Amino acid sequence: MGIFARLLALLLALCVLDARAQPALLDEGTEQLRLAPHLQYAVDPEGRADATTMLARVGRGEFAPLPDGNTTLGFSEGAYWFHAELFNSRANLQRWLLVLHYPLLDNVDIYLRYPDGRVEHFASGDSVPFSARSIRYRHPNFWVDLPTRTRVELLVRVSSRSSLQVPLALYSPTAFAELERDSQLGIGIFYGILVALFFYNLVLWLSLRDASHFWYMLHVSAFGLVMLCLNGLAFEYLWPNSPWLANHAIPLSMALSQVAMHQFCRVFLELPERQPRANVASLAIIAFYLLMGVASLIVEYRTVVKPLTLAVFPGALFIVFITVTAIRRGYTPAKVFLAAWGFLLAGTALYASVSFGLLQKGFLTEYGIQIGSALEMILLSFALAYRYARLRGENERLVREHNEQLERHVARRTSELSMALEQLAEANQRLRESNRRDALTGLFNRRHFRDVFEHQMHHAAEHRQPLGVLLIDLDHFKLVNDTHGHLAGDECLRWLGRVLTESLSVHGALLARFGGEEFVAVVPDTEGERLMQLAEQLRVRICSEPVRYAGNNIGISASIGTFVMRPGTGIGVDDALHRADDALYAAKGGGRNRVHAAAD
Image 1 (cartoon, rainbow, N blue to C red):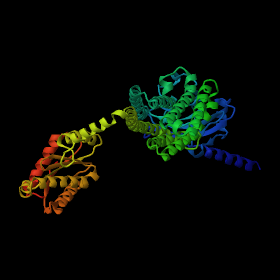
Image 2: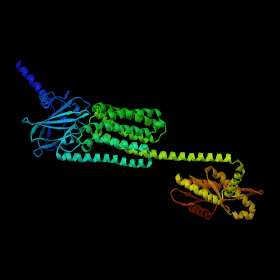
Image 3: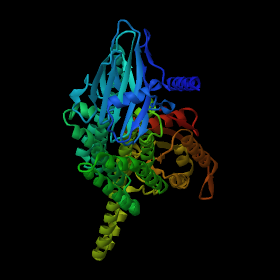
Image 4: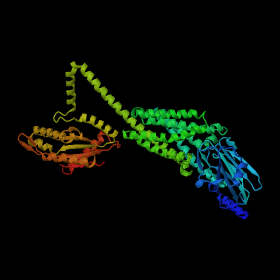
């Protein structure tokens, strides 16, 4: 029976030894080592146990392996203890840097027990001044001495009112320098983007006084402060000697960031006018975050941070909902806004999921919020530019409509107050019209044509539209006059004026008699083959329909020169007419009764 009891005790001891994680081996090829696979842990619910007690529990095998090697434990009460055995086989490197890659821990205590029983203790975390850290670095860190070929026990105690994450790693000095270089480059790029966007929108706000740019700047600033706190940079550079600020700045900056974000949404999506009910809900959310911001200064940290973190999800979904609603109601700038918000939502969701222990800490989950927020703020800047352009166009339209309404009102009042002068006004109108019209054909005369043509050129340049110019000349018109008389020639000119009006007025053409038997037409927004088709159809009709006068059928034909005025070329009225005239002479030189296009 005694032998059986000893065998059972030996078997239990072997089970305990087997349950322990394997020692962390630092050999010649090791420059950095993640300790998660080698850690065991135990929970101290009251947070009162000391190192001696916990080392005794290690000896009794009461520490358990990490579940799936996961060091993300969510919001937890009490203290967590972690244990690992370190074995350094490198003869030329005994000093290593132990880094805990999570800056938001209140208390981090490190105990090293050597084979001779000596125990060294180090303390860090954001509840003690930043100067307590071994080196100036945003994450808690400790220089540890690991003698060659010596087994050293590592015991870590962690407690925090925020999310508990304990990603421990050992680095050689060289490996840590390379890690810090890459990390600082990424952080520098991220904050460089935020600073550039801030000053860009500051200039726009100062010049435009658009409230959306102000709230965007506040959002960028507050979110930048949130990231400074979450990255540990605020504790390092802004308040290294104030643990109180290091803790309370996180919920305060989170609340301020959310207030600015929701207020920016209200202004950008024009909720008071477009979605009144959603606007009331948005104001309620803003009031909640303002309350949380004030409470963060007087209420216990975890009491504020947990509802703030949880509120991220419904708040984000609310913004997605009102943005989709705005898109469905035809508000085009909301499309860019939705894309921007999607990136931030994805990054924030990843980070919050790690805080609650739903996902493991990794590159994407750790830096997803920086990547997503950078993309979000860049796209939001684009959305602001798009919205400004749209508002400017809307304002121009409103001003134009207002001017038109004002002109109509003035005309109506003038008409009502000037009834006695109506006949004179009509006579003056007829006189002006006769001054603008050719007496024979009823088309515009050459002088008025130039004025209207210049106006059309400016209009086409503003709207980036081409203008098609046609110069039409009757072939052998002198022979018509000599054969049938000048009255027959006049009838041919009147007939051609009617043909031009019937054929080209439907295309909005400007028509004029340019002089003698020469006519000109300007067709808006027409170029290339379309202009040639119109000219050819016109030529065919002219030569296929005889002019009937005094019982005679007078057959006539025309040569047509065309030229396309394209926007941005700087060509004026005279140059355009010269180009069309050159094309007309080329058509005459080619045998008449044909269409010739001038080169662009």
